[in-house]
Image (cartoon, rainbow, N blue to C red):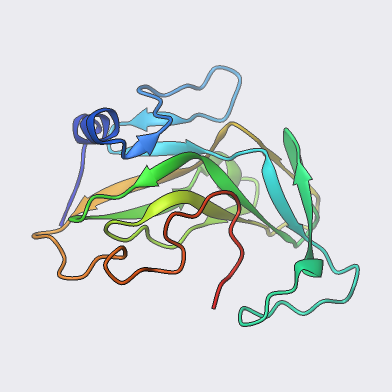
Length: 184
């Protein structure tokens, strides 16, 4: 398995719609950087957030997810309460090729502030907006800036195409748009 370069990412984005919208070079003037990098793509977080709250004493249950466990916000700056969590999504829509697995890592700017970005791997032939999980590990409120960089995606090419892709098995998060909650 090898990591794929900026040339490959650009070609796939421009000619095959792998990333839409696609930003061909790093943008960083006055913002948390985003766009194409040497061996990855720094994606932006949209302005749609689901911030976890305990107002109604809800229990977080992945098998029976209660809508009263979060509040929806559409904003340019999301404030995550101390030791709390928020869901968001990428601005970009991804279409993963059949012979590629995509791994996501948080941006160092957020990590150095105690904000962890978690995303599970994007499997071969998965497509959609990526749901981002932001954890504020600090005892202070934390800001997330919409339409700025949030995480970096790394593209790994398999030694051959997989036998069964995410699309083949009709994965439950296929084609998701917007912030997507847990599904059983």
